[in-house]
Length: 274
Picture: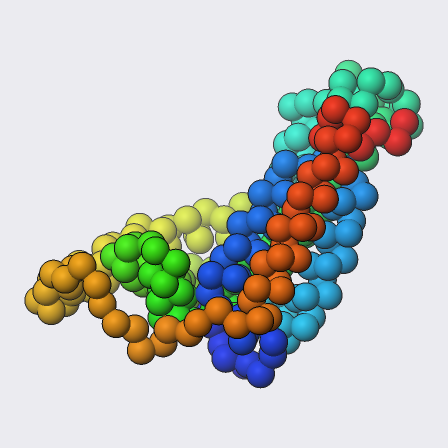
């Protein structure tokens, strides 16, 4: 199984859904997750995300590296939130229950831990939705689906190219990383964390130039084929919406509305157990 994060056809009901349905799931799931701080809603969304992710049969080998980066970013984010605003949770929930003194003016409180726990759930709720959208959506079919619901095909085609470009960027990154390692630049776990971050940063410049070269090639090829000359176009990969698509859309709308009603029933988007 490839370790590159890209679309792979599988025999699951999620793969049978159209790109528009998956886009709606990704958008509504992300919006509700960003808006709500109701722990009850977030926990339900987390459980559903894990279940749907397992049903999509996406291998851990394919997304493991991405999850590691997400986990690292999450840890850094939680540390920064506590460092710059150690009592944000106390302000939100209107109480302060100290668990112990850390250093200086920093105290560990139940309210701050609960607040950062909600932030952590948000990450693990949205991450599966993003990965499922990338790994189960055929870029060509997705562009056709967008055009079917009235979005100009220029936009749909641009989105399809962006989705196809994700694995290309990963391949370029791996290739440049291996070339740097062959020149003696250590990027494995043998080097310190700071050294790995600094050495990895040196990959960005050649990666940008490689990406710009590919963009120029694609642009010239599309221009030579007179792309965009006509107002409409046909699609080989286009698929109509089916019963499963409508069922998923209805569920998403009903769930999103219910989640937001539960979130704001007390006039605040924060669930307060204190």
